[in-house]
Each structure stands twice: as C-alpha cells, then as structure tokens.
Image (tube, rainbow, N blue to C red; front, side, top):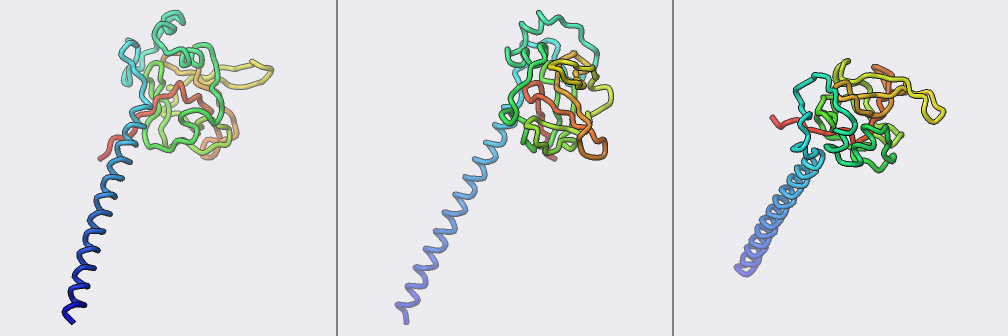
Length: 191
C-alpha cells in the first residue's frame, strides 16, 4: 500500500511539473503574441520626422507643391497620393485588416475613417461605408481609363486616396475603396 501511495505522489509531482511548464509556455506565447501585435501596429505608422506638414490635429487646408511633396514622401506613397496611382488588390496592408482604431491620411495626418465603418469587401482594397466626418474628404469626377468614377481626395492635402462607389452596405450604400499606402492606422488606446 505504501508503494502505491509513493507512485501517486510521483504522478502528482509530475502533473504539477507539467502544469507549471504549460503555464510558463502559455505565458511566454502570450507575451510573444502581444509583442508581435504591438510590432504590427507600429509598422502601420510612417516616419513623419521629415514631413513638416503632418498633423493629426490641424485641419487647415495645405497648399504644398508636388515638387515639395516629392522631396518629403516615400516614392510609392508619392506615386499613389500625388500621381493618382493604385496599389495591387489583395496585396496591400489593410484590405483584410480588422484592427480597432482610426485611419489617417499618411501624407498629412488628416483623420479619414474609423475602423467601425470598415467592412469586408471582395474588391481587394480596404473599404469603408463613410468617412469620419463629412469634410474630411472631397470628391472629384474621374473619367480616366474610359470609366466614370468618383475620386476621393484628402480634404486637407489634396492627395488621391481612392474612389467611392454606390455598391456598399447600409446605412450609406457607399463603398470608399481606398489605397492602403496612403492610409495610416492608429489603434485605439487600451482603457
């Protein structure tokens, strides 16, 4: 009988050791996931140290020449924002991203969209059903490539963001189809 008690104690010690190891591994994995999520959210932010026009609070309309923007912006951001380029569908940063926060203009810092207005779209670009406020974007007819579209432009800096279409979900029925590269995501701060 004492032998079976001894074996049971061994099983108990082994079980406690396994539980301790699993707890350690779980804590390590959770810290790795948290640091990875933090690294991802930091990667969404551009370096604005060389952009004197960038502000998340100033809504004053900017009058900056394309030559000046070309000196300040990364080439790919300049191509989309100032030359009305487009990034490839399904191969851009935010098309299937679901973080909670605010999307700002990567060129000037103007607040554009909230994550709760973002929806899953099969178009391959991030899609929103409404801007954060009515005067954060402006609209311009676009007849390029033989199509009739409505271009969406940042109201503060005049940068090309994408296009808006009338095939979105309620409540607006609109789909703001934006280029990820001209958006900067800032996650909501934790309470």
